[in-house]
Image (cartoon, rainbow, N blue to C red; front, side, top):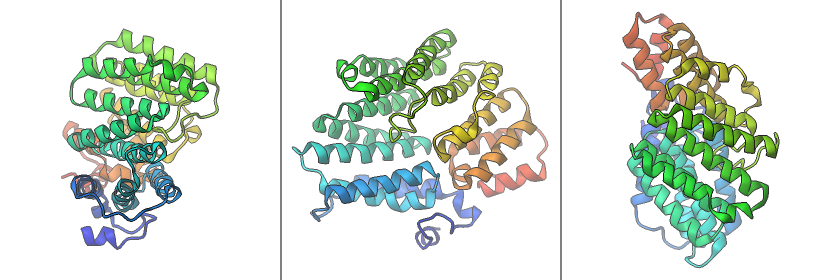
Length: 334
């Protein structure tokens, strides 16, 4: 498996479907080795070179190219660690941004323990670098991990405390967008806690901030940006997890997929729609959404644990069509 993926081109077109089902595990293994391994010998990479590596890795994340991420993310960790100097704000901010991308990937792959390690390193580097927006994003990722660990009170506190930081209010439109993202983050925690009313209050607040800022994406490299459309996408997932899949489905109907800012966001939207149909017991529509996600982003669909869980749910809830069995096989689900 490892040899197959390693020999594939960075475009991510090489591995067969059977290998794609294991790409998530490969990414986690390689990132773990890079995070826990020794600090690389000094190679003096330039800040522009590391920034270029980060840009390429972000592009692979946005395009759901898991084969490429299995190569790029460990390389990015090594070069960023070799670059960072304890007192250089630019270097520390680059290091923090690299760790934040790693954290988002690990969260997507349900590697929560390793995600905590990457997120803590991101937080430390961000605070040393002193970049307000990076500090806010690091807080947001910590809140996500706290929520996924079942620590809802702590997750809520982390996100809302960061949103109230006065430095965001003096950071212009980007600072306002960061505040909106943190409020949105907190609303999702309330959804997971079953507080539907509280979730809607905070989601509406985030939506109001987004409308005030307009349709031009802000914080494009901070988890997909912040616009009225991305808040609407958040609303779909929040409503379904708060226990109202019909409202989630209504929210989804207002989202033009092609207008979302990246392939990753469109794939995520289809995953949320599939989950909504699953909660409504509409198996055919759920499978259709998953197959649409597969056509759009096959590597993510085959490798992501959340998708595998949905496929398992479909297999357990009724007879399996040839299409479902095919998707299950391509995703490594028995």
